[in-house]
Length: 471
Ligand code: FAD
Image 1 (cartoon, rainbow, N blue to C red):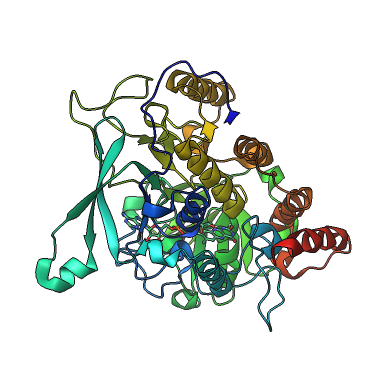
Image 2 (image 1 turned 60 degrees about the vertical axis):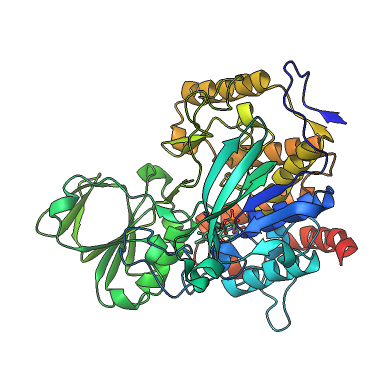
């Protein structure tokens, strides 16, 4: 048994094979199901998925939300032209290589290929039989010391004339994998209420056509902001991108398009249509596209009633987790609420990581903790770790919204998880390819996906040699 540290307080025993509910069948939910099967939880693993098919984010949806600044009923946030921002050999799960399809050898494939990869993954590991499609989880409620009532609504019930009716089932554990690229976060711009232009969040952006001939301001310069600004620059009169970076840090090499400019953030909006940037420059714009990220949201998690089954270990009895300025907490290492571990867990919260491998390692940890193969620290120890992490962030002036931003710590986190799970960590070639890809996105956003650099060849050879064992 691998062990984090000495346990000091008992927690309810887990049956070594748990009945587990997984919420969501995107990349995180699928790999969670796979790791649960691998760990022997097979007999009752149910993956609830509200959409009509698996794949989550990677199912491109032509439809956008009716409110261009809201989420509405639309889950996906992909735009038509999207290609991955990580090379395929780095992006794939650890033991299921993301191979090129015949006719498309590109290392940064389009979104349809990612969906096909996830569908192949689900078929390869016989996961589809676990997934209940068109079944939305509407409630997760604690029941006794160590089980959960999951309430859901399914299309099947609606089809039988029982629309609005809920069913419920009891599970030993719940793994939350509902994604976090659906609920838009908006930039706060003084004066925006009186500003006459159109606004949209990148969640609703699909194609550039509506911006033909317009002056457009994009807010945010993460990979989506970089892509969307270029997409729109192909048809718009002018594109101005507002970046949260000191002017000296804004790379001049990024603006190779004659109609695209980078600026500091917007200071205010004015009634005549002007947007004024922090350096005093201004443009009269027709539209703003907010590429400003998303909010975590878990509308199905129910609060425990007073005197309910909670208690001990800290972490606010009553709520499973709270979301405060995009900090989901308290969570030990982004996965377990200390008071309730391992009976409920969250897979897929970190960002600025290599998502699929991180989801896989988190899932492996969860599955091992549920079977008892991996021992977790006591609730008190986990809570102390969380408190220390939050204090450290505060001491370094890092706002709460960066809690799940792994950034420079991503490899450390992945290696830590791998060690807990008794698995090999992230391969050195994968780390090196990731670091290079990240640097290129920032410096050459127009061309990084199609560049060939000789110094990649050795790394790619290593990757192909290593991944060959899984073919
Ligand atoms: P999702 O894919 O969002 O899946 C969540 C699933 O949960 C959905 O199917 C949803 O329908 C379901 N669900 C939600 N609520 C409920 C409920 N109540 N009941 C039942 N089901 C529910 N990652 C990369 O590795 N490489 C990239 O190049 C890359 N590019 C990206 C570009 C964009 C524009 C975006 C938005 C993200 C990108 N990502 C990329 C990150 C990507 O989101 C992750 O790779 C990953 O797909 C997230 O998987 P997930 O399972 O956590 O969430």
